[in-house]
Image (cartoon, rainbow, N blue to C red; front, side):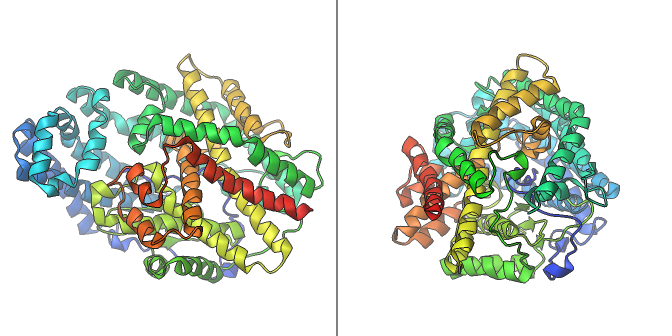
Length: 612
């Protein structure tokens, strides 16, 4: 069972020094919907069920898939799905408890032990995908034709069969499954625990701060504080840079070995397969964004430098508030009302779906010692419900983060009707509802703006978020491409990795920036590079897709709301071409991405016009 990642450096989220009282009553997770307690008999019962069922599944079906008729194949797949659901529930509970306090050794042990047991219990099931992929196409077509209930699973089975050319022997696949707990996942834990334990001494601050608190200072109105935070980050990252370089070298080499054995044509190909997206579509997205750097990020940051009265921006100015921006704290009730109002204005059904997140313990919003940084929505399993994690500090951008993660949650609730195997949306489409939720909330706030300065602040904030979502994530993607390509030629020193990072930063941010000494190490804290290589382009994909969707909505496309809900309910049961066809959109058309990018350019046009 995989876990969602905190958002990839899209915005600093919280300052651990600020208490929750001024923000109102911040909600906490109620994990009893999963299990009453770690030592609850229900947890032990389900763990025993997975262990027994995994062994029984192997005994009943291994070596026999080619003999099964349609009803028997359907029964096999449904039992596989049931075991996946129970295992997912167990790991969701263990993982979410851990994320509430990553520094708690008991919680870390509980999750690690659960992961070990689940891995052992599901090892006997590894044969299923391998053996299924060896079935003849003609025989499978006959089974699908014989039973519509079986044919319903075809999308996920087809995605599995797309891996056929890259499949290893049964013995090797089983070994890799077994060894996973001491391979990449072990390095992931080392990275997470190291990051959670880092403390930063920022000039002018009375106490040492953790990572998120220090990142948060990069959005402070005081430029001296922003600079002090950036230099503290650089100092600590440099002190640990050999460890972070070792993590990246090891994971990139492990991936190179895996890709070589599987005959993957590129380091990115496995991600494209799991996303069910063609490499040429991703390449078209990447090329469109890079070509747009001058009219997007380069142009905007020159404008921002002018507003701030600076010849050049420094890295600590990138997410700085504008000089005209009045400091504002948004309490939890106001944030809830803003987002729920935006959702309800689009469709009352969307607000109804979002309501339990606020009332039933589905959101954990407060800042707590040891809590994982960032924000995410975790779907758990389709028989329970999603959980949203925030680190809410009351900044206007935190409201947008709430809108984003709540969009994920609503999407996950709607897709749950597909069942465990078909509900999971490829990453390229997983950001659709979240970014759309942000856009709805932004438009509501913009409509409510009372002064030109407030409108300008909102527009600039949205442009910065879009640049962070599109430009910055594609720069991240290019960095990963360069990193993995270079690692295939040999071990990379920290200086080698630093140089790759700076090459994409200069290209993407443009000539408005000077880069301080030390910024070259800022690749070190991005979790996606460690946890999920090449994940980051999904953000840009989602933003471009939503911009095109929103243009269709604003243009009055008939029955937009019902078509939108149908798309979310589909989960992973349809290809992106089929999902976008009702809206008259096609992501495989290179011009598709220009539509989304033109929306960002249009916002910058508005900001430039305000200068006149």
